Each structure stands twice: as structure tokens, then as C-alpha cells.
Image 1 (cartoon, rainbow, N blue to C red):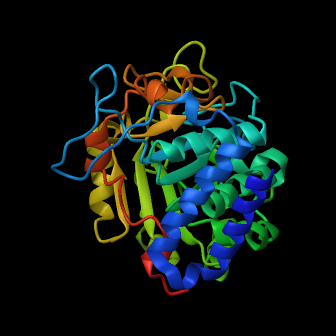
Image 2 (spheres, helix red, strand yellow):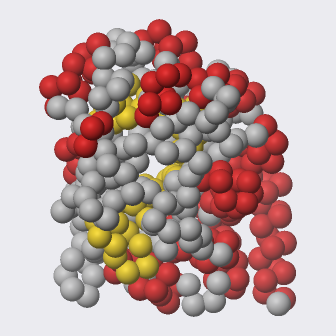
Length: 361
């Protein structure tokens, strides 16, 4: 107990001195975070092997099997599958209602940090649906304030976000990505983003204003499909001025939006590679556009499901590893099917901390 009190006191002192000590403070803060986490989560370190990854051109440490460990630099944690929308092409559907206890989720995030994670992205389902966003907010706070991650981001449909959430948790969030597939509300309804009298596009404008007010970088994600492939979004995207506009080609995943046991049937949404290229050509003057074809997307993401299992999409479906909570990150990630080269090729590593984006708030 005395040791824990000492760590907490040291942490408070660092908080006061952080502004002037710069990078030294950041390093010491992580050391104290590790020590405190070891006391709060006894045994967390023992669940995985330590490994080191050196800089470019330097030797990399191997594990006991002679393999160079994969570093989970950027992780997408889909902690819930529940959603209030019914997008016809959804590739992570409501097959369970399970959500990890908050303490267990934090333990898993600590393991990922220890394994080299720099960026965490929370997604779903709809991440704001569970506990009215409070569960998500506490994970965001934990990752930024305690784990000191470079980047904490969220992907959401935006319909359940309230200004109160920004007031409580906005300072800990680097990027908020809102899914918007069309600026025609009738098309959104066809896709499955309609919600009665609520207007998805009008809500997008409100969220953009809140992001500016509470200093959160604003991003837009769009899935290009049969119903929006001919749309011209140049004017609207330039007006919203997101830091990134991620444009995905509609993708089929067996068991999610394709096949007998799937909850969606997305075949009618699929477009050809040529049609996708045509959409990109029409929007080539949008400087923030980041395109992702099916080829770039399929194996270039580290995806954790609601049980903290890595999902391997190499065979066109999502095959889960064992949970990192049971076998550790290093062992579980071997079965992730992650293509690190494609991750880098698609621009997976970018300026992802709002402190480094130098935005004009």
C-alpha cells in the first residue's frame, strides 16, 4: 500500500511539472504508469513475453520460436457489436451483445500498450450505445491520461453523441470519425442510416462544430457502394474540411454481410474496382481523401473483437484468435493475419495525435 501511495504521489508531481520537462516527463510518466498498472493489475506482465523492436535497419529481437514479433502499433477495438443503425453492408454485425467489464478492458489495453501500441481506435457496432457513452469515455480517458497513448480515436455513426460527452471526455480524444456515406438523406435511408425524423447530414454538421469547439480532430468515413457511387461529394467534404476523408470500397465478409449465417446480405451494395476508381477520380481534388480498395483494406487492420480476440480476415471471413487476456498479445497476434506492409502502404501510419496536427481551432 505504501508503494502504491508513493507512485500516486509521484504521478501527481509529474502532472504539475509536465509542461516544462517535455519528453523526459513523458518517459517517466510511462514508467510510473507501468509501475502503477503492475500494482493494480498484478500478473498482467506475466501473461505475455517481452520483446523489443529496433529502429529501421537495426536488429530485431526474436521470440523463443525464432520469429520477429508483430508490434500492434495501431489497433481497432470493436468492444461492442450492438448498433442503432441497420446499414446493409455492415461488416461487424450484432452477433452478440457481450461487452467486457471495464476493468478487464483496461487490463487488455495495458497489455497492448506494453506490446508497443501507439494508437487505439474504438469502434463497434456503435460505440456510444453502451452505457450512453460513459463506458467508452472511461476507456478514452484511461488510454490518453494513464497509458499516455499518442492517439485515441473513435469511429461512430454520430447519432448518440451528446455535447455533455465532449465536455467530460473531449480533452482525451484525438480524432472523432463520423460515418457518412451520402449527403442525400434519402440515400442514407436506403443504406440503413435513417433514424425516423433525425437527419443524418444535419447531425454531421452539429458534430463538426462540437469537434472544433472542444478541440477534437474531425474525420469522415464513407463506404462507397451501389447507392452512392455516382454521387458528387466534393462541395460538402470541402466545406466540412475534415483532417481525413477515408473512402472505403464496399467489402464482403463471410459470416457478417455474406453467406448463410450472416445478419446482412451486402451483395446488392457491391461495386466493381472500376466503379470505385471512377469515384476516386471524381474526387481527386479533395486533398484529405484517403482511398481504401478491397485489396488494401482486407488484411491491413489489427481488429480486436468484444472478447479481445484478433480477427483474421485472410480467408474472407473473421476467424478469431484466442483472447489477449488469456494468452497475451504476442501469442494472440500470431493468428491475426495482419499484413504490416499493406498497413504501411495504405497510409496506416500518419500524423494521428491532435497535438501534432497543428489545427486552427
